[in-house]
Length: 248
Image: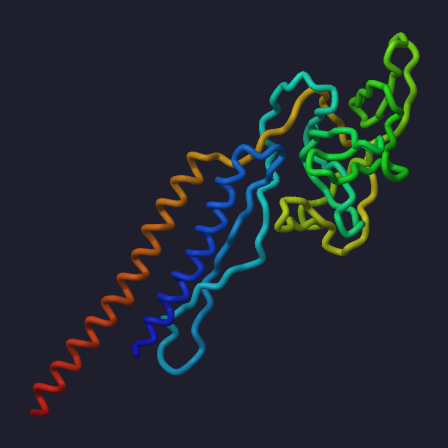
């Protein structure tokens, strides 16, 4: 069988993977704070006899587009967005630190500040506990304050400080659940330079129109790879027929 079949098949396989990444991004176009996944492919020269004219497609380390999404007003006290670079810190299901741009928070039945998915939001000293029957606000620097219901706004109590980090893009990696993790496994240091905007949420940075165009383009490239395989099969059938007729 012609080696072209293997080369075209490798290209088709990587295109299917890229289609899956693009489809996943499209599915999260309305997910708060979502960062689009990226897939990059490189040509790798086929080592062997003959001229160096053949190359396979191989995928590189997957990444994420960290560009900020647009900020949308919600009018909700427990909604905050990061102004510029940075991440909120939450406690993952395995107990380790994880990082997110989704600042839509809530208060659990136990009084802990949590995300809408139930993960504990971490402060500089660990989880933040909200007093019962109180209204909380989150300041621009991440300070969490509480006012008991029925009391004046002057009786404000600071109950915690959100842990905010600003890692370099090379220091974090995106996981399958949409959260980010430290590549070294070591918790990141808090950064006082990260600022927040209250009563707003950051939208996904996925451009649905561009993603749909990418899906169409990837489908056409996949069809091209399949046509190459079909052409090889047709050429081999013709060659077989010529050899059979010549030998009769």
